[in-house]
Image (cartoon, rainbow, N blue to C red; front, side, top):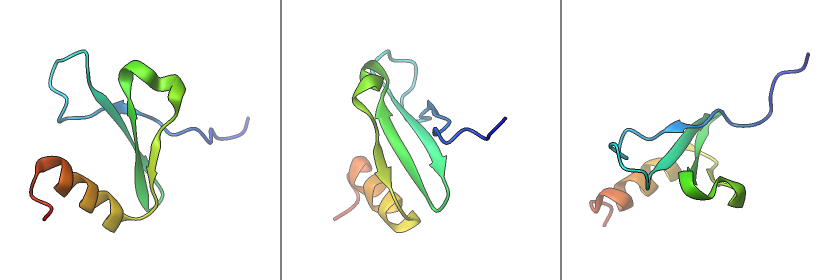
Length: 64
């Protein structure tokens, strides 16, 4: 059996208990994010930790 190449998504800790949430997956050297309600539309990949940190800062509103 071969290891899965699909990211292992989990509910983001920033999503609380709402049904409108995002899921996040750890990737080698980065992360991926997708909309829980629209999983079939794919995910957004961040190739390195710096991109991921910038995305989180912007999402929090402190990335200026």
